[in-house]
Image (cartoon, rainbow, N blue to C red):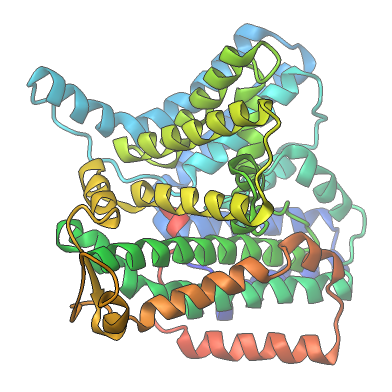
Amino acid sequence: MLFNSPVFLLMFLPLTIAGFYWCTRYRDSRIAILWLLAASLVFYAAWDWRYLALLGASIGVNYLFGQRLRRQPHRGLLAAGVGFNLALIAYYKYADFFLANLNTATGGSIPLLALALPLGISFFTFQQIAYLVDAHRGEVSDGGFARYALFVAFFPQLIAGPIVHHSDVMPQLKRIVRNYRVGSNVVAQGLFFLLVGLFKKVVIADSLAPWVDPVFAAAGDATFFEAWVGTLAYSLQLYFDFSAYSEMAIGLGLLFGIRLPINFNSPYQATTIADFWRRWHMTLGRFLRAYLYIPIGGNRRGLARTLAALTVTMLLGGLWHGAGWQFLAWGGLHGLFLATAYAWSLGKIRLPLPLSRGLTLLAVCWAWVLFRAANIDDATTLWATMLGMNGVELPVLFASVADFLPGVSSVASSHFTGIEFVAVVALFYWVLTQPNVAERAATIVPTRRWAGAVSAAAIAAMVYLGQPSAFLYFEF
């Protein structure tokens, strides 16, 4: 059940909202917690009911670990709880990756498990690891099992984040028990985020897929121009797709009076790679910093330790995204970017802002090739093509430009005419000049102009709705 599907928008969501409001108004508000929990479990079961037991077991075991750690902190118990979570994600997400590489290294023929990846396991696993660590630190209070289960399984953020910290949500769930009412302004903000996110997904992100898929499906056949347009189009597709999901999650949460943390804040406007990671998948960055980077040394134990901590953190962050060498290499490349930027900053050298922003954006888009490619070989092939190592050809639309550039020719492209490049540049300009999400969230108030803009976005989204496509981050 996708956020951008008619079943979700026209059936599941209205029924869930109606039941929640009825519970908070006419019944004991504690029933609203159970209603939302039941709806969230139905939402998850609609994907694959076989993994509902896995989600339930993960929630139950972690709740018991958390209760014990909260009353009696113990390093061995914490290690057991974290180990339980890591074992789950290792088995379901990385077992085949490990076995395949073991077979390659040893010439063996161990059969692969061929397990389907349980949706959201990367997100709810990290979320509960953070909970256990904080319970061990004495930073968690008991909110009851139902509230804990809803904290983990709340459907707007269950599948692809944000990775919610207990301090973000548990106090809000506690308020629901106290004769809770959702304010009209909060609902208006929720509708804004939901419908604008829907527009970004179905009108913009999905429309870019035909410019991306042919290039990465046949990396060896791409021309110089096709490789660049495919890479830039994917950078935009991923941007709008993840932005859409993040904003729809916030909007859905607000419809129930729950503010989820902002997870996406104009990352392509970043001026450094570190700034990019403060803006892109912000809750994952917060988790990696608080529970990995700082514990292994951070920037407090000398330059060598800091560079090593950055590299290890990003390698594991890359592997978190997917069981493949290309994800590990993508994380390692970002680790190299961060380490280089940190070493550069020690010299107190400052680049002009436009140059700093441009280099950051170029580095991010260059690394996205690894993120999207089927394997490292395809990524290196596309990089070589983008560097002109396989010749430089431009579409006939740019024939007059090609005439003045030595070694550059113009040909009729099988995929692109040149109009796509103009559209990509226009989209990048829009992305780089729009105010960030945080600013919009703080200033949204219902007005006629606001209602007109949201209505137009909703109508356009409904026209394009058709056959819904999954959000890209559902793969992780």
